[in-house]
Length: 144
Image (cartoon, rainbow, N blue to C red; front, side):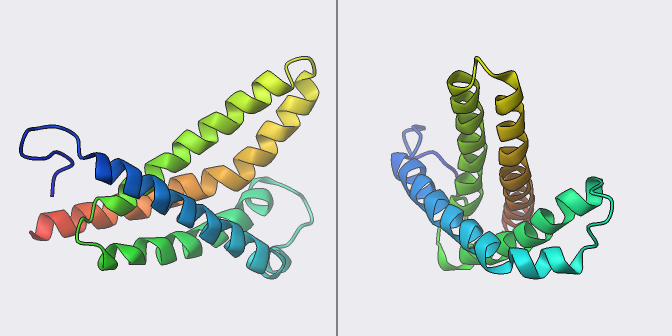
């Protein structure tokens, strides 16, 4: 399935459907963080606060949530919906960056802290979701 119709125009329903699906996926990731953050964080030692201690819990939670979200690909006839929905996560991430940079332009320390917080909680879903969704889509597309 291509993202174009017979007149070689972009299917607008794909754009709208993937946007709506991305909002649903965002709710799934928020619930996954909310319900499992304590459990995963307690399993990771917090002695040093190094790279793995900071990034491992969000990445593990994101992998589980992304696998759940990517399983919805089996429900749709247009398999491109799920990867396209995860592209919107990059748009959301960029929008948060712009909002933070505009809102906190007078205080670079506050904006740096907010950007770090946003990055910790938005980059893992963005990367794991796109990685799993696009690799699944390409595997399904190759089989056809």
